[in-house]
Length: 248
Image 1 (tube, rainbow, N blue to C red):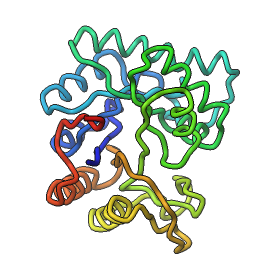
Image 2: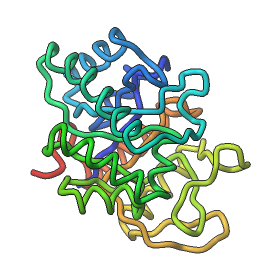
Image 3: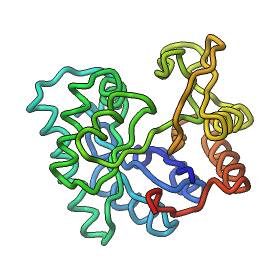
């Protein structure tokens, strides 16, 4: 069974429209986007649509939407994750919802994918906060390796709307062709990843990939159409069930 996740609470107008086509949401914690009100509103949407709730921590950098690489000490990085978990958990508790997972955002996500040291600190912060939380990370990356080593459950993430390099990393948003905007192309890529455990990189090479959860970005052009197309295909093939607990 495959989960479909989406980054939400980031000020996009598509959140409610995407909810019927996803099974988990990664909600901004206020550091790159969002605030108390957007977090609570997005959690309430998740409750309405039986969507799993996740925390989407970021560098504290709203001016760059969390997409600028910052270099923190180990203690600063640990605190960065813990502060956002605490803030988010207080709102989730008020809403009567259990947090399912954690997925780092933007530059924090990409840096952790490359750095085992960063990933280990992030995983430890999550584990120390709540060892039952699931860590979402780029398939094959250090974030998944660190999560497993730390004792967390992990979900290997693939992307419907991003293209890949031959080493399994994502093509930079600054490069041409980094974003998949066609629902047809997104579906084709997702089916290759889910059915064959492969993805075709931009250089034409096919690389191995594990696909536990498929990400669709809410700020991608045609995001709703992409989500609907991917969801419908996966559901038709029996790979998807709305509101699923991926570990049951």
